Image (cartoon, rainbow, N blue to C red):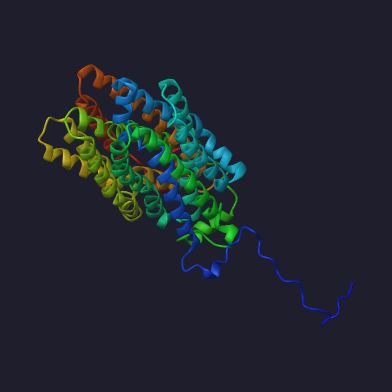
Length: 432
C-alpha cells in the first residue's frame, strides 16, 4: 500500500445516508420534527378520529343508525386505540419512531378508504377498530419523540404546536363534509375516501421528515440545559419510575377523566346541534370549523404557560374552562350560550394532551417516557371507550344529549380537583 504524501487526493468523506445538510437549515431541525408531528396528529387523530363527528349525521341517516349505534362506532375506534397503545412504546424501541409513525399512518388512511366502500355496521366497525389501532401507533410515538427532541423549557410549547394538528383537520372537515354531502347522494362515502387518501399523503411526507434522535444529525435537543444533557448521557436511574407508582397512577387518572369527557363533546356536539336544536348540517359544520379555528391556540399557548407557570396550574385552568363548555351546552339556554360553549371548548381543545405529555416527560425522563406515556394513554383510552358509549345510551334513554354533557361537566370538575394534588416534578420520585 502506498502511504506517501502526494500520491493522490484522499477519498472524499461520504455523508451518512440519514444525515441532512444541516448548514443549509436556518432553524434547529427539532422544529422540523415538530412540524412533522403536527402533520401526524392532523392525519391520525384529526382525520382518523375527529372527522367522525361531521360524518356521523349523514352516515347515520343513510345506514339507519340509532344514537347507541353511533356511540358504539365511536367506542369501537377507541377499543382499537386501547389495544395498540401499550404496544407502541415497545415497537418504537424496535423499529424507531420514524418507521412506526409512517407505517401507522398508512394503516389509518387505508382503513378509512375501506370504510367508504362498506354498508354493514359490523364491517365498518371492524375497519374503524383498525383505524383506532393505527392512530395509537402514530400518536404515542410522536408525542414521545417531542420529549426526545426538546428540553424541558421548550417541551410544553413544542407538544402544544403538535396537538393543534387536530384543529386544522376539524377546520377542513367542517366545510368539506357538508360540501361533499351536498354534491353527492352518498357524500359520506366520498368523505371517508378523500380523507383516507389525504392521510396516505401525510404518511409519505412524515417518513421523509422524521428522524429518531437529535444525535442522528449531530444535534442536542432544542433548549436542553447542561444538566439535562449530562443526565441524558449518564446511566439510567437504578430505580426508574414504575408504571404502578403513585405519580404515574395520578397522571393516568387525570388523563382518564379527560378521555371520558372530551370525547362526549367532540362525538356528539354536531349531532346534538342538528337533532336537539334543529340546525342545518351546513350551519353545524360552520360552528365545528370554529372549534377547529379556535383550537389552533389551544396547544401552544397553554403548553407555553405550563413551561412558565407549571403543569399543575395549567391543567387546573384548562379543565375548568372545559367544564364550563360542557355545562353551557347541557343546560337549556339560548343559542348565545351554545356559541360560548364552542368558544370555551375551542380555546383549550387540545391543550391537555400536550401538558400531560410534557408532565410525563418531566417526571419520567427520556429513558421511560415512551413506556409511561403509553400507559397513561392506555388509561386515557379506557375513558374514551366508556364515554361515547355511555353518552349514546343516555341520549337514547332521555331523547337528548343534555344528560351526557352534564355528566362530562361533573367529571371535568373532578379533574380540576385531582390536578390540584399533583406534586412538583422534583418530588415525583419520592412519591413512587
